[in-house]
Length: 233
Image (cartoon, rainbow, N blue to C red; front, side, top):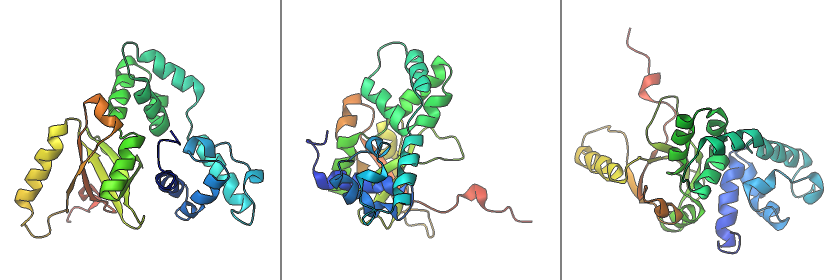
């Protein structure tokens, strides 16, 4: 994978991942890559001896390694998840579920729940897709957005290329739904104070092999939703 993707793209993806640990850790991406750690999985094995303390403080290295390791799924959970997914499944989708949805994988204890997690992972943009979105849309796609309400769509954190503007990327289960929702928003965009703006983002790359996802909806990430607004007394 490292040879197929531009090093600059790898660095930006690693930087986005490090920012999920702490808002300032993204600046260490180049140092980790220079030390030979280019993926989130590899960060789980980094030690203080791998990076000079004058480049990255020892405390930061320990914390990054600890959090990267904690994000890795437990072997038992993975084995159970794969066992429950009996039948014809795409192994790369299983690997993405394990990598980006470890909590959901861990609690999937029935064939139906495992299949539900698998179907959600089926909608996750893979590396090639993320790189193309970064190149064409100048948007970095990061990990899962943990909503406190049920959603049939896949929700992901996303950031502008300069990492200063947070977004929410919504990937509906059916590809046509994104275009329908975007068209509806365009028809209502003239209404004052309407939430938005929305942007239709093409998702090209490995994800197209599943035949499930072609578009996503990019929208501002608000600090609260309507359900958090107090009801008038």
